[in-house]
Length: 512
Ligand code: ME8
Image (tube, rainbow, N blue to C red; front, top):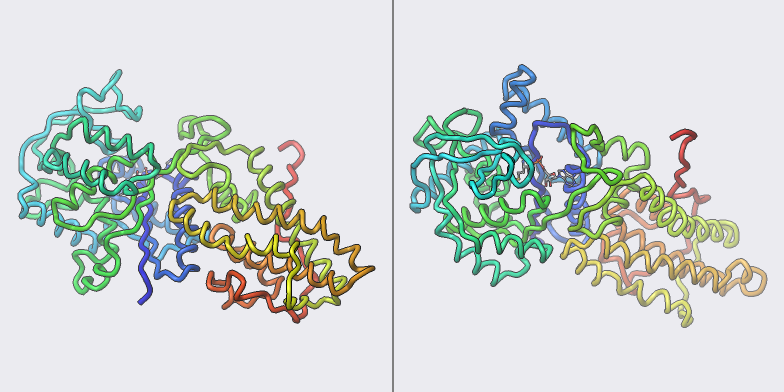
């Protein structure tokens, strides 16, 4: 069996319609999942919905529907979104599924057996919007640090002995400096833990929309303990016959999350797993947040961005490229029409689109519609383009393993720029009159560049790259990363169709 790569998105609360933030997290994972598949890994890419807790229960009540019917409906919207946006998740988990109850209850029982959960009572602040408990010292002007309103909660509660894990967590960060990325986020997590940890309330007794605590029906599990466990549920944990899958998949290679939910993934989750003597995920990456034309995105401001509308306006691949190229992954970013059009018309239509169209048109017109054959030898100018191209993959692997998607794209676009300079320098239109053989070699060198570029952009732009590879005449089974580099050249010798542009220019509508 080939090597496993298991990556996850957060599971989304079903209190709301999917928006650009959800699409962004899943998109980053989708690009990474596609990259790893093309690179020969046996990938499992998980997403899903987080359906319990007070927030969801309240949204259902506000709509006058029971929580189960409500979650069925909204969860379906999220599942539909994965299809509309072409995400390639291998599983879609819902926390209301039986398999998930089984996993949560097994983990709970293990924590009880190991003496890390005890019964007590909670009196303190709770923010329903964040589904999080906050210490008195964190509350300012009646609000949580996230700005969420808080309420005072007093109820019997089971507690997890989080305080016992401070040193172990700090040691884990120390010994595994890649466990949390980017680095600045690791520092935040480290100082939070170093500041001292209190035991964590892990059950609620004042409402019932959750996974029942084994042996005590008066309590449901705290929604974050329930939610985090999804990553193991889908890997077979607690499932009858799930042992082989669990052994193959767990620990996860990557949990991708937004910066707002890092504490849950980098502090609570590893502590639960340590307490259960289970392996920890290898890495947690916290990405930044998008604003809309400089403004915080919020329902009350009415500026929520619908990813389907963006994809319909600009194109799905264009949106994917923009989101992953515009912002250094990990930083916050601003979504603006101007920036979107700039990327679309600059990087895509002008730089890569024109290159592809020019090269294929010259081949179509000047080589009688036949793809030139791979030359027996290359001139220095050709090697100036081919050598860095042949060596791109190593750098791409590094960037994808560091989740630096913008760097990966930047490196590819350096080659695209070099290819554009090469066309101008070699002037194949002039060679047509003086040296047909050399013209064919130059056009072949450019077609080979387009082939490798198209193979490498498949994770980010699956449709446009397929279109390019179809037009070049590259077979579908010759598009994996094993076909990159000098040992697998574009052979040529086949007829090509009249080329059609890959990336349209975006022209703003009158009055838009
Ligand atoms: O937190 N820009 O779910 P969620 C970028 N159920 N990302 C954004 C964003 C924005 N403007 N707004 C939201 C939850 N997000 C829990 C997770 S996992 C065991 C449980 C991102 O639906 C946000 O950072 O509130 C988070 O990663 C994701 O959307 C899910 O948010």
